[in-house]
Image (tube, rainbow, N blue to C red; front, side):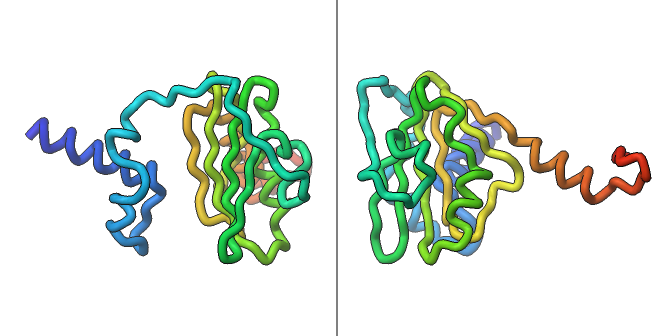
Length: 163
């Protein structure tokens, strides 16, 4: 029974890692990454380089961090976040930046030494298909949640919300 639970847990983690949802096929499980690749520790160093060609697809602060490729109207953004760029990747800023874009976006974020990214709730946007995050410290997650709760439940004339 314990082995079955462990196998189910690993399958669930693997499915979440690949961003599977009910409408997607299980064929995606056997795509480019294998389960053994997922289980290996993420070894990266700060000598890895990525860069943007200088266009304005993403905010300028990410030009040195992300490499962008476009295929059939979808931008794939691969971002390596090191200690010099820790905290610059901000989902709320990116969500606003691409709001009126005619393109879809996919993000693959990898952090060196658990650099920080800002990923406030809700983690959804009109033009973003998926975000894969590896080895990052996520900050700001509850910011959007508390802001939303305050806006929905503040009825006091003093401006203080009641939770």
